[in-house]
Image 1 (cartoon, rainbow, N blue to C red):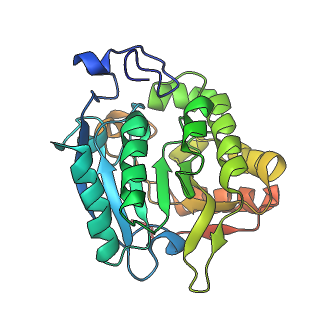
Image 2: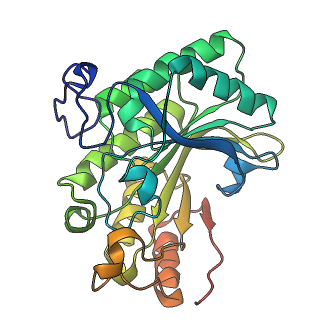
Length: 283
């Protein structure tokens, strides 16, 4: 897949094994920005012990409002070996992590599969979380069946216009919907243990954007009608203008409480009943 890169839907053909760097800012070698116990994810992911988070450098999207742009757009981080990634996973488990949480992992799918298989061989026993933008090829996701236990996946937009303008990608909606359907096919509805910690399943994230440009209602309708009304959904209010959004006429302001409230109303109207929301504070 890396000879002429076909990992993500861009299908850019970059010769990563020959030293070329793709639009995602990735080459052959794994590059990570950080790894730690993270307690800021949704409750069933972070739990009491924290999520064993590994932030991968680079991203296949170009979101103008990216809140992690030094990592995703500027590819801050350091090159590590696959052997080191195996050690990191084992160290995180020993530190009490409930899971191994790969953040923005898509462009390193082949390397991560190899590392997880080797870590399992060394006794890694906690779930693998695939924390993704949702811009995934179904063919690539099928390689993850039996590797990934929990999909923590974005649905950024319910219409293509917003994706094209703000994430610089065409056809996002159909690609994203097909990816979510494949994830649900593999792992099903989010399942929790007796302590409320996720063990398997799909958790969809949706970041509400100012001015309704994410078409939140369309996202919720798709999930309720095409996936399941029981789909776990995290409706996020944490938007703030970052990166290039500070120069955009619409996105240069924070979300209002009315806009977030309207998105929650659309969630309920769609018939979804398994959700997480964030406290909203006007700033």
